[in-house]
Amino acid sequence: MRFGIIFGALVTVVAGNNSLFSIDTDSMISNECCDLTYSRINTVNSQIRSKVHSLVNEDYFKHFKFQLDMNCPFFECQSICFSPGCQLDLDVHSQEYNYDVDNELENLNEDSFLDSLCPKNNQNQIIEDSEWCELNDRDGVIIDISRNPERFTGYVPTPERNIWGMIYQNQLEGECPMEQHVFYQIISGFHSSVSTHLSNEYYNNATNTWEPNLDLFKFKVGNYPDRIANIYLNYALVTRAILKLEPVLADIIFNAHNQENNEDIRAQINSIIQDLPHDLYVFDEHVMFQNSETKDEFRTKFKNVTKLMDCVTCDRCRLWGKIQSTGYATALKVLFEDDNTMQHLHKNEISSLFNTFDRLTKSIDSIQNFNHLQALRDLESEQDFQYISTEDEPTLDDEDDLALDIDSIEVESITEDGIEVKRGKSLKQAFDEELNAVWDALKFIGSSYINLPHNLKNLALYQFNLWWNKFIGNQSFDEEQNEQYLHNIVV
Image (cartoon, rainbow, N blue to C red; front, side):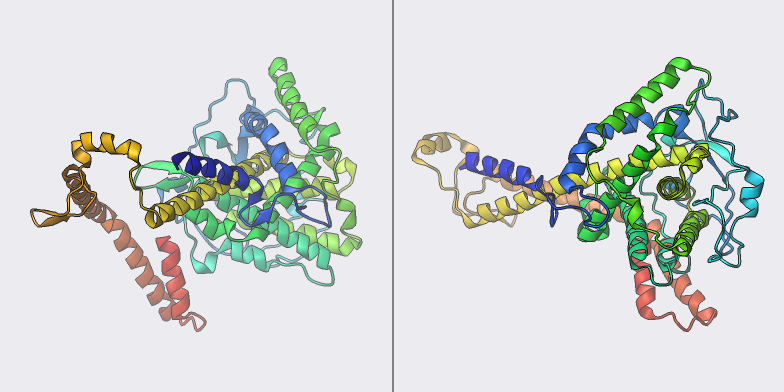
């Protein structure tokens, strides 16, 4: 019987590899832009995941020039995240990397670039240039992003400063259904990928460890097959951009002071590119932008996405939002601009592209792990049902052993300090259960005192939000929104 349960567990977990929650992994992620299947991407990702992670830990890729001062062009704001997880570690460790070195790909004219940015009072203005992102790093500092991993920080934006909501409202206009759909898919995949990272690196207050949170992942991503699909589509898009950028990557100087390290980075990149699916229809950029005006609007809308990341009030969230939005913008720039544009990429763009690819490889890896955890949870539920519905009667071969085990002798009922010990439960088992129950109660009481300041803070925020909206006369604010705000700050 136990062998059958173990065998069933193996079958269930292995079977989970053929599906991602409710998605058939043998199906294609998109019939329009590529013919990659989920299973093919999973296979490719298993081959390159460790290589990509190792690459982005090289000095060239892990150092990102970042503007610490918020420069939100859409509304007045300042950093108000009080969680310690929002803070950045500004310590930079490097022995060889020279931050002032410019190479042939870093000759972007910053003055003309800054002059061409969207005016603050008109986020929809069309910009006649080939820039897809807002770099905003002229006065930035070098951040070692390996010392600032992307994880759950406890940051919850206020309803009126919900950056994702503003991004989703930043839709294309006019008759361009394909481009509108692709724009939404890229943003959804970006958002879902970030949610996957935060769910995978979630802080458990009970154990004081960072660990996967399956319930949070299902709530944010797993219960929505289209969100998983959009992560895979972004994976295909960035893969195609890296493949197209391959000839240019050979000319980049990754370390001007250490030729051996420079060649080692080239070898790492070549090894990754060799494992990418050259033989498949990865992503066809030629099916889009038959109308140049649509392309200009698409470019401007996505540039505004990178600018909106400057409005995030959590420093670490803003850093990773900036990196990944710049990475997607760079991929679009490589795919949809002429080949000459690829010769003039800024270092932050190249670094962002590969760090975004690393984040996507991590997302794919995490999704499969969450799928595995879900399969194990389903198996445990099935086993619990089997134990409830089936009596474990001792066999003839077991009777002699049971008779010799004093702790396992069955009694009808005994009263010990008013506690009834039912048939099949020994005195030792009953004592251990009661001891554990007392211990659990003490832990609950202790955690209640520990969480009291946090709960009082949430209550104060809830009441202040209600009072503030009434004070300013917000007619559109209702009780349902206030309850949603309470849910957000508690979760």
